Length: 207
Ligand SMILES: NC(=O)CC[C@H](N)C(=O)O
Image 1 (cartoon, helix red, strand yellow):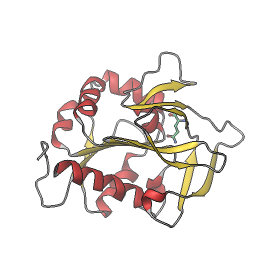
Image 2: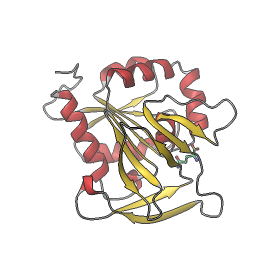
Image 3: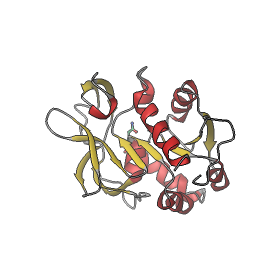
Image 4: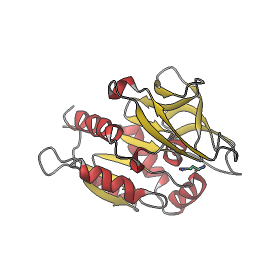
């Protein structure tokens, strides 16, 4: 057991960083998949969870709030200790080693050895939807919703690319305990990405 916080058999406790952004949607999806969810706003709550989701929203705000709430250092430590963490959109930005087109002074938590470019699709294509082939999730393409999304511009050696757009731009990655998507699986009815994350969490609990 790798320091499990799980109390009920097979119901992992998943924290959702609830400082800002669409944390409610993630909690709803995770609950539908049988997880117990915890809104994380203070560092003590990080000790009660088996995995963490960092939602979409605005990474500059999430960065400032996580630092002023004293969450950013404990979060970095949990990531280094192997807590499974899934970041969507702004959450992916939070997990990246390097932010391109970040705001003045913007910091990330790091963990994923990637560089991401914020708002990579520009104002002309603020939001769009497309079907992505994601072999790790099975044969059926996943309908993906992008909202002022970042793209992954470079990946380090230990990073697996899970999905890319037709033009090759990377939009989903995995590295060890960490998972990140440029898009928002919490706003569609296809929950395979959250399910994939929960499998990672269960694997970590039983490791
Ligand atoms: N939907 C989102 O999470 C948008 C991310 C936002 N553009 C940012 O930089 O944080």
